[in-house]
Image (cartoon, rainbow, N blue to C red; front, side, top):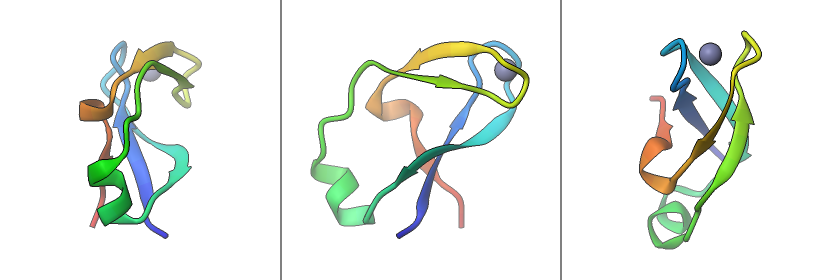
Length: 55
Ligand SMILES: [Zn+2]
């Protein structure tokens, strides 16, 4: 399944979230308030609209 990516809210680096999602399942999913740590060590909380797929 494709990997969901995030852009760090602190340093704007794009990084893989570690969450793989079927694209259709993602559209109907309710992802909220997950913490992720970017490669530079910034911990931030992300909502569903923060996730994106890289083609
Ligand atoms: Zn960062």
